[in-house]
Image 1 (cartoon, rainbow, N blue to C red):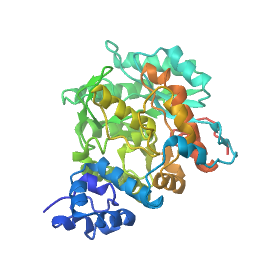
Image 2 (image 1 turned 30 degrees about the horizontal axis):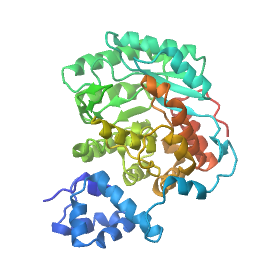
Image 3 (image 1 turned 135 degrees about the vertical axis):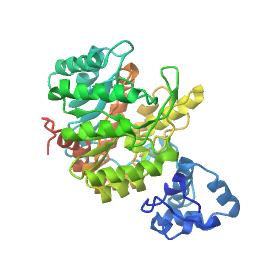
Image 4 (image 1 turned 45 degrees about the vertical axis):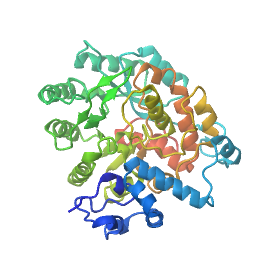
Length: 431
């Protein structure tokens, strides 16, 4: 028996995850596969034997990019996509209404539903980024510092939230005391810290920050991290989820379906079980879970309590992966991009400013968001000093432009309304 791997499922609806049986080269055309994207299947059927062999050797993301390119060439009459500068001249303008303008982007209220106060950023820098750039509200949690205990981290962020005078709310960090480390010896220590924080600080919190289930190893100048490769049934993860469920607030899960491809089927199966078992409690996948549009659609259409945070799902993150490769560093490489690709050579100084006029959603992602506007939640995920200082303005400009390309009501929900509802925030989102 041959069990389909995750890259192939990128193009198919994952209704039969556990055992999609295939015979030889006909695997793509099984009865289960017939539920997938018909256009993608047609492209695959038309491949020459040499192209098919090359296609089968690709990983998940390479296959997605290959099919996307073929589909775009088909739509454009066989020519590949024009450079960003040429597309910018042809970009249709969004009518100004309900906070959206083509030139300035979305100007309505915005809630950053997940950011962190790291060790290398000062409180005044975080305050300046939020207040000077018009962010309506920010959900903040703490990233631990060397020599700083969990309680001190929470207190540091609580002081910052209080100093923002109603423009921020507190999320209890779920990554302290070894909760973001792989070693099993941290399980008891980490869960004890979470329970202690729950008792001490929940009265001043609106919920809990991300639970690290999977995290690719980092070998960069800024961060050395061995990574985390757990699943939703692991003792540590199940214990952390139980604490959040007891408070009846959103469970934010950090899973990486691309970077942890070998466990993706298991994670999706466990996630569906959790969603079914707890239908009245919201679950949120930070970084979109690195899900394909088909996987996101399947989850949304079958579970009313699944939501997605838009962090690390854009051309900025795609360019970031390229930057790491240039420098010989490694971290996550599986981020999805819901938009057109960044220009060749990005990132370079000023590239986002140049790119924004030609920014466009990929058709499949835009259609899914417009069809289910209550399931997607804007978030910035600022962590380190350069996130709050150097890159805050450009990232916000990017997302204001992106939101302006959605219908006004969808933009309002994604930018503000959904976060207000999920975390029960006292924020005026308009509408």
